[in-house]
Image (cartoon, rainbow, N blue to C red; front, side, top):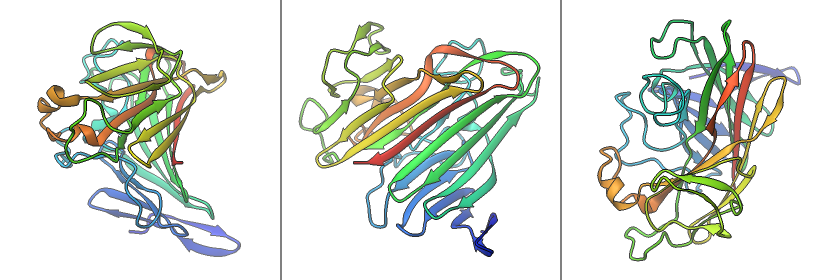
Amino acid sequence: MWRGRIFRDNFLLRMPVTTTNNVVMLTHPASGAAAAVHLYGATVTSFVPKTGAADVLFASKHALLDGSKPIRGGIPLVFPQFGAGLVPSKLPSHGFARTSAWTLVETEELARSTSATFALSTTAGQLPDWPHAVRLVYIVTVTRDELTTALHITNTGADEWSCQALLHTYLRLDAPASLATKELPGVRVHGLKGTSYLSKVTGASEVESREHVTIASETDSVYSDAPDALVVQAGVGRTIRIEKRASISGSGALKSDAVVWNPWTEKAHGLSDFGDDEYPQMLCVEPGVVSRLQLVRPSETLVLKQVISLE
């Protein structure tokens, strides 16, 4: 379905964006790079960097796509709270953004990129567990070798409020079908040495001493004020780079966090929408603002952005 049009050099161009069964497909014609975005949750579930390439993102074969629960995989959007969160509310885990129906409001084709913009708004008092006015705008951009996702959170009300936000990115690992070693083979996260983190598995606060983070058990670590560039060895011969930024209008750049998560065996068994044998195939490396509450005043916009590319 054609969703928009632009004029360039006096020619009318059709957008390389189609929508089928509430799934928006973005394609970069020159390279064949493509991404899929479900209107349910505005969840990006696939990013293929060029024709014939393997997907960079992981989505569980058991993920439910009928709107009955958040999509297990891709890049779910976490707002206004992370987990039970620091936000005083009765919202379900990770908030309402990933379980809401979003609207495709704009598409754009340029020589180097294809993008789509999605939106979701609430008015004051609309949601009992989130009584604030907010407009969420999510821009997904595909280029020859990059996927950029940018979440814009604008306070459209008269009162200030605080929130957490996260791009819950599931990376696909080039891992064997069965795991015979004590750690995910060839999987490393570089760039976190010297960063303070909280292990949500043990409850302990530590400073990362490892040159690179390996995964050998259930991992759920929140790295505070993490570096803006992280490199993930996602198995043999597969390296993914994540560049992240956070900012707020009028105040400039903000420090942002990174969450590293893998459920491992026991936790995987307890997830109904996740295969028991899928944990060696994925690793979440998630940029966000979750180690603290971020104040957003009236008319201010909090922006959370990541750029994912293969090295």
